[in-house]
Image 1 (cartoon, rainbow, N blue to C red):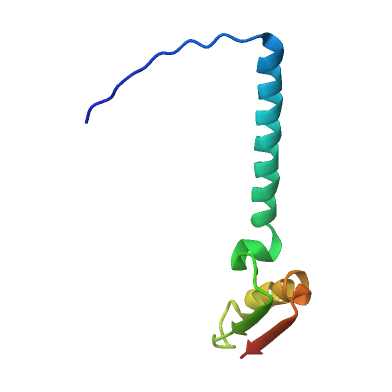
Image 2 (image 1 turned 90 degrees about the vertical axis):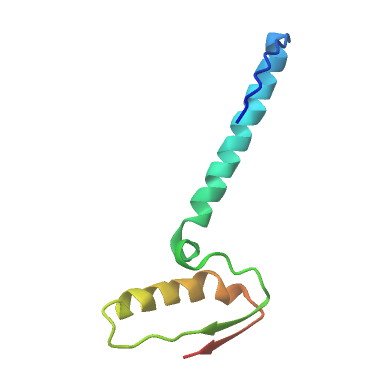
Length: 92
């Protein structure tokens, strides 16, 4: 594997550099808020529901130890995302 190193010097006014710094900081902040939103609540476990019509297929034993955790997650999904859809079905 070969590496090529190129060194370039860029000269600019301090005010231009500050503007670039502000824009980069704003972009990083926006991405951080987006990641926080994507990893919160029902989106953390189920992802983001993007379609207008959704069919949820549920298949798990009700005697499972994680049954209550799963039902909490399902209620959260229904409240936060599925309630905004035009049509949805649940197959249990």
